[in-house]
Image (cartoon, rainbow, N blue to C red; front, side, top):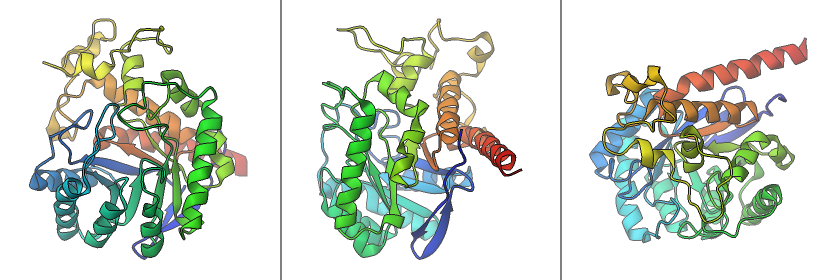
Length: 340
């Protein structure tokens, strides 16, 4: 465990330090088909209220997305995406002018109009592979640009074949995205990288990335990690193996545990957790999310921070705040020990 590198970016004219503490990016999906909360916040008014709730519970940034990138998803037109995200961004900006809003999109047209509506960050899940003009939008507006690694397309990315070396794939892919961003006028100080957990990787490869996130330090950029509710975590929480047998498909914890009454599979259930699988929304915790999955998400968040993540992207902000604080305190203690 090494001290976390320090960086500074500029968001809408304001300097933001990265590294002193972990920043939390709260996920706000305004889509009908996202893998865990599709359709729940499709109505703009409800989405705005949820975004404000995420901020109130500890989210530093709100990531608004109008197109699902879950495995098997199909593309959305720019017009439909804009119709979903612009009312939400404007509503959040109107209700809380100082809130940092990120637009989660792979389309330059959506990024451009979102920035004009009040977003301050562009989060491109394709790493400029789908629409390289996004880099020009970021450069023209001076907006931070998140470049994520993705192999293939969401519709087919989990069908394989997968890279033999995940680090060659991720490191080389991110380096390509960085070069393309710089060539389009994005300042290096405004780039954030994301290894793209769950996007075109095997279950084992996702955990290899978590275990050795420090392998990305040579890129000398702040790191964002998103593990929240992803199927590779769900499967392990449910007691499945790290490697899936040939010809078999992992069932995933969400499919097993969140359907119906939210019951936890027998092999994954702990007696003390049986009564508390759904924590009350009054406490800021999401209804319908099994407690073991929240604990698993917290473990992954902690691991990513200790490995060097500067920003964590999560759905369940209230449930992850404690994990972030503990991980940051461990890093601070380690830093004090090194300096003494």
